[in-house]
Amino acid sequence: MPTFPPAAPTLSGDLLTIHRLLQSPTLLQRRLRTITDLRFVSDQILTQRFRSSGGSVLYEVSEPITSDRPVESVAPGGEYPMAATPEGAAALAAVLNWGQATLITDAEIKRTVPMGNAVDRKLRKLINSVISRIDSITMSAVGSAVTNTLAAGAAWDADAATIMRDLERGKAEIIDLNQGYAPDTVLMSSTKYAELASDEKIAALRRREATDNPVYTGTIDVIDDLKVVTTSSSNLPSDDVWILDSVQLGGMADETDVDPGYTVSDLAVQVQTQRVPKRDSFEMWARRITVPVIQEPAAALKITGT
Image (cartoon, rainbow, N blue to C red):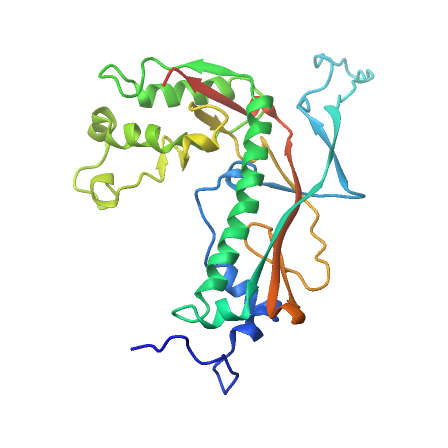
C-alpha cells in the first residue's frame, strides 16, 4: 500500500525526482509527447508549414496555375507570343503568441498518488487549452474563407441518404475547378461519423469478414480515398461535412525559433517551467506562436444538409 503523503522526491541512481523533471526541458518534452489529443484537427487539415519573418508571414491567395492568354500556333521561325504568369493576391498575416501559465506547489507534487500525476494533469490542461484555442482560430478562418458548398442528396440519418455519392460529388466539384486540387481529407463531427460508419449502403460495399470492418474496429480511417478526420461539432464552423485538399488549402505559420528554456511538443506548443523558491512552487506555461494561413479556399467545400 502506498503511504500518504509520500516521502519527498530524491535523486538516487536511475530514480529521478519530479523537481529534476520540471527543470529539464528534454525530459519534459518526452512527457509531453504522451498527451497529444487527436480530437484537435487544425494541424491535420492545414498541413503546410510556413516560416514567419518579423512577426508576420506573406503569402499568396488563389494563385492561378495557367498564364493569362491562350497558347497559339507558332509558324516555323516565328516568334513565340509572350504571356504573363499572374500571381495570387498578396496577403499578410500577423503571427500572435497564444499562451497560458499556471502554478504547481511542492506539496501538490509530493502528495499526489502516484507521485507526479499532478504535473501530468497540469501540463495536459495547459497544452490542451493552447491547442483548443488554436483550433478555434483555425476553424473560424477556414469557415470564413471556404465559400463553395454542395447540397447533400438527403440528410445522412435518413433512409434515402446517399453518403458515398455525396462524397464523390464533393470531390468532383473540387477537382473540376481544374486548379490541380486533389481532395484527400473529409472532416466531420462525431455524429456525422456515426451515420457514416453505420450506413447500410456503405456496409454493403465493404469487404465481407474483413478485420478492418468498423463492426470490429469501430473506426473508418479512409473512405473513397479520403482520410476521415472527426471532431466534436463545437470545434467546427458549422456541423456540415467538409471535403478538402489538406496540402493545397493552407498551413500553419509558426515562429519556429525556440527561445532559451523552452521545449517543443508535437503540435508546436512550447513549454517552459521556472522555480519560484519563495513560494515553494514551480510556474509552468505553454505557448504557440502561430497564425493559420488559408492559401487556396477553393481547395475545400462543405456539404450542407447532411
